[in-house]
Figure (cartoon, rainbow, N blue to C red):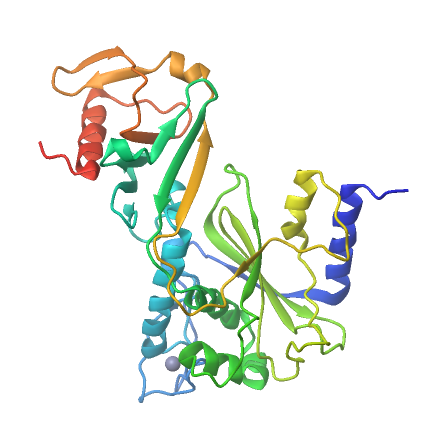
Length: 377
Ligand SMILES: [Zn+2]
């Protein structure tokens, strides 16, 4: 009897739930948070207190992931500045995802620029209608291609540089914020030390990995949400905490390193990392059974402290071919509509289904495309 794929996924879910229980949820509130007055604030990360350091509301999830109001009162300004640097590496690692999905954080518009500056992806709204424009300056580079027969649109771009370990630290910072004050103080002083200094005192060479799953395009998280799980069995080879974070079209699972009572990974006695059920969705939808002994969940390694430069990525969308039959072109000079030609590779505009524009809005859109492509009037 060979087990069906849903059975295998159910088995993993059961294993995860046997070892871990939910202990904290991080959600973005709709309005500003208030905190009770504290006599002297202490920074969770560096341990310094007022008045040696000063405090401002520090965002727990980066603003650019769509978090407006979820803040903490235990992160000093110095640590906040350091983490802002990590967050810029996370943003570069994500490439144009946030623009493509119209996740703007506090700003109303943001622009992604590829490492060679040929591709610009801009998310904004025209007449209150959300619009994402994908434009390329030099059409001959063919960074944007559309296939009118299959309906498959492809964008290829080189991402801005990022340092993998800094991306990992940007995500770990969120997890360290989710801990209770007590657990943070009792068990994670080494993790707070490592996230700030990276001074070589701790060997995390092979521990900076994240299990992940990419959601379908219509399941995008415009605000992030995270769940912190704590192990409920007394077994040192299981890490004490794992965080699941949903943002944009991604689910990431991260195990918190450097808990003082956990066994560090060693040859011969590996640490066990139970896989969160959502990560298993790839297995479920791939339809391929897995061999448990050799199974490797989808993983991204962030162990390197060397910059990754101009990493090329592709992103694809699907347009039903029937839409190309009704395609029209618009001439902003004469103000006339014509029959659409098939040369749509200078720019691609993504709107919600059923969106229509007035003539004035078309002109605004056309000018924006020109501006992004660097064409002067
Ligand atoms: Zn601090």
